[in-house]
Amino acid sequence: MTYRVIVADDHPVVLKGISLTLARDGLAVVVAEASSPEALLAILDRVACDALITDFSMPGSDHDGLAMLASVRERHPRLPVMVITTIANPALYREILSMGVLGLIGKSGDAREIPEALREILAEHVYLGASVLAMLGVEQGAPIDRSGTLADLSPRELEILRLFATGHSVTDIARATGRGLSTISQQKSNAMRKLRLASDSEVFEYIERLRL
Image 1 (cartoon, rainbow, N blue to C red):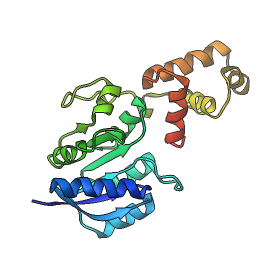
Image 2 (cartoon, one colour; image 1 turned 180 degrees about the vertical axis):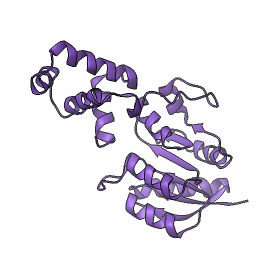
Image 3 (tube, rainbow, N blue to C red; image 1 turned 120 degrees about the vertical axis):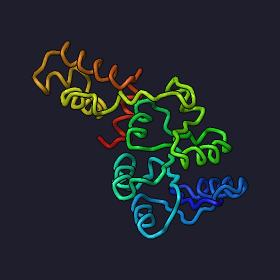
């Protein structure tokens, strides 16, 4: 059986590469392509498919990332979804998987992962690419710990990460919020621990990519 796949990415070379990979394997045919979240949602509403392969971030739109995945899940709750991304951030990976995404692959990985991942998500199994597995510290097929997402943060912890990611120092945040320096520092540390983020650069990427 040849499966019908819709592919979304803002880079034409990536779209072409995925199409060639699937055609060469003979597993699937690309029935439609999209280069923005808006175009993707419109196509999904009118083109029948068996699975979606999409980028996470498509610049130029305010509806990419988690917002896009949430819209796909709301409109097409049974559709198997695979995300292929340049992101290398464990907390962002967990956010993506929390949206019901079954396949998650790094763009720097082996292209042969795509057909293998497609077979797995069509069977309703989770498939993680080698780079994702290494970042999360798990093995293929092992249960995935779904904790470590936005849902685990308190409103104050999220507020502090937002302020920090927009260029405010811990001292600035303490002054602006009227809280003690040690309190702000502890809340920032708690938020990073809950999200399992090891560096400030990971915090910046996490907040920016989620458009928080």
